[in-house]
Length: 327
Ligand code: SD4
Image (cartoon, rainbow, N blue to C red; front, side, top):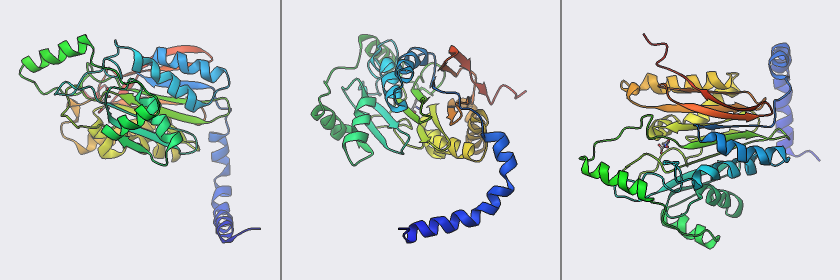
């Protein structure tokens, strides 16, 4: 039997129908397209190997949420990737502290921040999502939770990262802005065979950050957002700027209003640029995937690329940037 809530919903739908019908021809021309699926996209060159692992899950009829978790675990475990998981650049005191989050097609999400000594923060975030009533655990509490869940503690500061940190210390601790050498967060978005979207984002954050600093990557809405009706977005670069604009949520909302993934990313970058006189000093890159399997990206300055894996194979694409059309 219909209750009051259903009734209110029905009335709202009824009164909206006039509007919907008046727009029906443009909506159908634009939106009724066969979605291109499955597909997975992710930030940076290390996205190629990560996508391949995710692709195996997707082509075995797996869920997007399992694909993105599986995918980003590849760079997390790779000590050569210096800004994710094992081997990530430490903070200014020499500690490797990790941030990650994950979000599925039902608005479920999990996140960890300032997590130490655990190689796969994304899987801890997944456990927060699946096994707790919470969204986010940080620091000591996140580490205790990970241990209870059977994650093994290990030292994540490799000799190479330690040496670089020591050199940085002895160089007078020059303030290191996020430029093309030191931002390689992996953000990954996938659309599975059922047409469901999910995303994951994991990082060691800005190199030599202040102890205790947490960036955008574990913040739902800033470093990652998924709305299964519309699309998904993730980000890389100077996290403070994504936090100030809730950038990934903004990208998804722009897609909801009809923007293509690339145009939504462009507008989110432009929003940042409009607010900051010195935006040219920073890098920010957004990557988006919509419900139809269309993707796009945009960044402030050249250098950001992203990896795509679909039935046609793999690609590494240079994102368009804000400064390229500036004289
Ligand atoms: C952060 N967005 O912590 C991240 C930086 C990044 O690889 O992209 N790092 O601000």
